[in-house]
Length: 113
Image 1 (cartoon, rainbow, N blue to C red):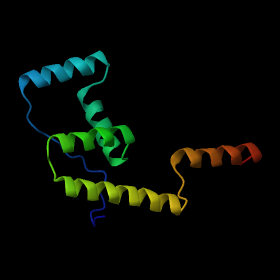
Image 2 (cartoon, rainbow, N blue to C red; image 1 turned 30 degrees about the vertical axis):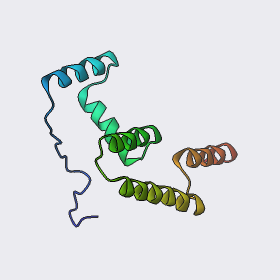
Image 3 (cartoon, one colour; image 1 turned 90 degrees about the vertical axis):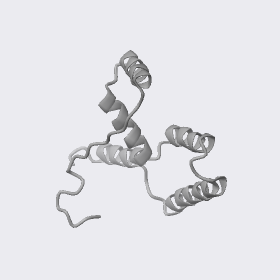
Image 4 (tube, rainbow, N blue to C red; image 1 turned 120 degrees about the vertical axis):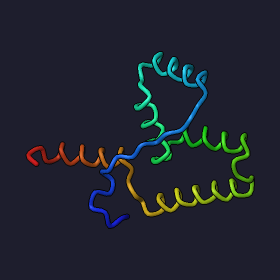
């Protein structure tokens, strides 16, 4: 990705402003669930990167309701994501659960490895 040998290791700060009411309500919800702010945002970032289904569904709904992008561009984006998923399935790439199952089978068959 980058010529920088530390790429992926350097930490970056993400900052934005919210109202004091939204901030307080977020903190209350997070404390109720015993999650701190950093854990929450890391979870959201991980979910976006990994394209977690529930988060993507929420995000798609948010984008459309707030008219962040045009309906035409939104539709094209959805088609591209679906096509990408189909390509991954066509190539038979294994997800983490499938890889773990294979390793479990190998360890049962060859316990000395």
